[in-house]
Length: 245
Image: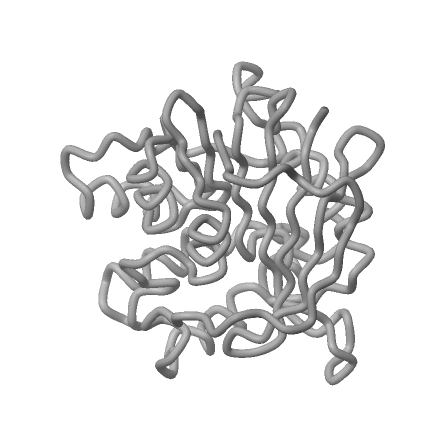
């Protein structure tokens, strides 16, 4: 991966971002949110906090609700970062955690990365492959809590958008460790999350809005927190960039 700028040596908080282009999924009312709330509450109560994602995608496929997280464009905060840094993925690898229907993975592949997109939900992975026939992206069903050994430390760019905040803590702590483990030496992690602004309890979710300290936990002892940005993109958001030496 070849960003145009040198990475900063310390964490920076930016309060005045440039205007962002929002995707359709961020602008329309989502009827599937109601079902997501019910399914996630039932799954968490049953001790299966990640057990509802495939049920939700399956309901979307059957037409019972509109397709969840349905977008054809990359998340605007990912695209804004890549364009700002003039990222060139030629000769580099990337992975999208919780890739859903594949928009972010396809975008990274278009930047030249050899890209893997994985999701816990088999329905999402199957639909992503169907939506992008002939894609260069490798779509896989995988569990963030039990990643393939070959993936550990294997990716020059790791992208995580709204996956960590979709589960309570625990098991978010295990998910954080899984995301961190994917970053290769010299690689980078871009994480985008709902930002906690004090308006709702921290345990109100999913999605669970995240405080700033999430990124210290994500860095752990082996990643460097390069930047954290407080953004407004259809609501309060974080965008953080971390690196491995």
